[in-house]
Length: 301
Image (cartoon, rainbow, N blue to C red; front, side, top):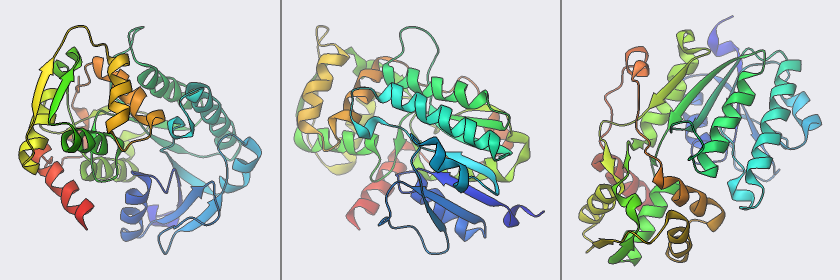
């Protein structure tokens, strides 16, 4: 059977990544089924919309029928800070059991980039736990690990934009010196679609990042320069990531249930430790500055 005759499921199809991926796969002629919790949700023309709840295993069984490959793009932070790890764990287990019963062949999961160990933030630890649960299934799991994703509407982009626009002077903790490897959302979508097309990626784990390795201070200062905003950053050693997450919540348009776990994770360095994906799916990677320009243009429209 030709790949375009197989049905692909996208969970989180209405989210920041899911809606972009849906559009690209439809443009490539794929048969796409979109999972959404609500009924009055905008799904791109040409896609099949199905209603289901990742926390309700019974609702997943019928919508997985006939699925060859599923993209797992959901997380529970938007549902509230308390208990998001438990909800993510339950959702992943429900999906894995339902996918096994439906004989799904492949799952492609977008999770977080970061080292293992006890010092990880709750958010990064949860992303790794979801990967392990998916790997326990009978299907082949492709795990893409990304750090900061730059794109209009994405939590990381909106967090940076909100701080730069509203705080010309920032008193920050030491996490401003932590290194990260941001990646443009267009490159993330290209990697996801590329994994679907390339069977060599089935069952593999790959770090994905852009061409620039920056500190968070670099990212904030470059963003300010690109937008013409004044910015003075004053690092202090006594302000922990957890404490800083509270004042960030006051000045960011991103809901605290999402922004606070992200900020607490900034103490963890998130850079690619291997670049195998670049040989399998060669891309002309987009720089951080260009990714910000594209996001600003999209937001303006």
